[in-house]
Image (cartoon, rainbow, N blue to C red; front, top):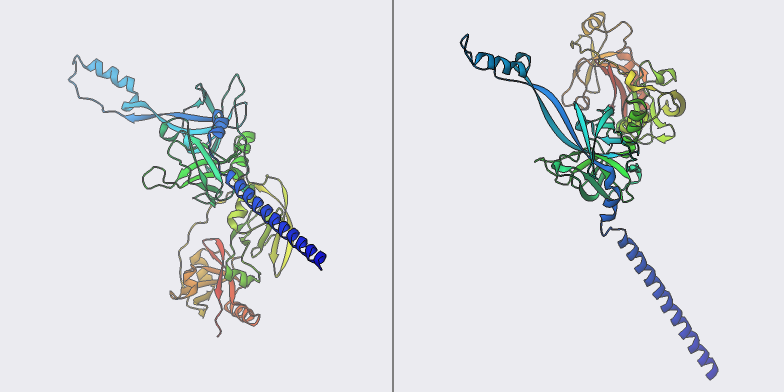
Length: 489
């Protein structure tokens, strides 16, 4: 009995010791994890600033323009001052125009040892002379290689006897909200300055079709335009471009064009001196929840094709009413993402495009054209008239297209559909922008040539259990899809 008790006591002590050792190990692991997380916060940006400073430049531009001068006093013929004033006016140029020069300041950064420099287009726009000041103190005159107003980017080139310090592009796609970043530039003409902050947001759009801005609270002011936004590895993930401010100074809301867009644009400017964006050749709109329901999509995503003019998509068999779900292996969430992706794809590339059509998916192969060579003019506007032959459906009063209406609206003989003669102001149709004079050419992705056709589509949608009916509406030649809720009547 005594031996058994001793063994039991020894066993309990061993278990207790193992428990405490395990607890201590877990505590040490937690402490190491916390310490590791704390170390991700930089204690200083000095090393990073020292590393990249030689590649950041100040930019001074000069522009010559003419200003009107006072023609001067009227002098009596033969006056001793007459010759003096004639010489003065000759020096000022014809018609009293005197050339003057203005200067502007900005920032930039070197991306190659042979002297290619990135900046904003608005920094050098209209400049007669562009002077680059380097961190070491020397200056070089720059040549403008190419510009892209759509993304507000420009590429410059300097000639140097010695290789120049340069920085590399980083991947803005891996930057997360909350990551540390550092901005450098020439704010308010004060020279080389550093500011730090975090990524406040991603995917911001300001005004352009191809916008993809990183928002940051790192201080950006006038003069920072064109300067780099660095990640903690010293790579450029954005080009500082704009600020949101009520007073012209930084309030912690700055925007840098993402490297995902900038790197591709700059490479095109370097290779061709101009941009060469891919072109799919479709008009598109976002897929809303009610459109998704009306089209039979499981989720509201993709880009809904409203029109397919002559171009790459038409040649590949794409049709109005298709929903583009995937482009070149990448899922399409909305129109903005698709436009950027197409633009970043090389001209002449053959890409796989997956579309949703008639309840199933199809794969098309499209050879992209060039956007800059395919811009179409906007159709002229037309006056809107009503026609007495009407029917009331979905908050709309619609009319068949008569010869008289076709002439009044300037419609060609091949246009078929229904004219919107009236829209109830308290209706969903009015809220979604339908107006008198719109032409309804399709309902539920089938052509409508008469009021009877539209009524048939409405009933078929109800019988199929649809909550809404998708209409293809054209206004001034510009098509768009609209989903209208079906009532229970």
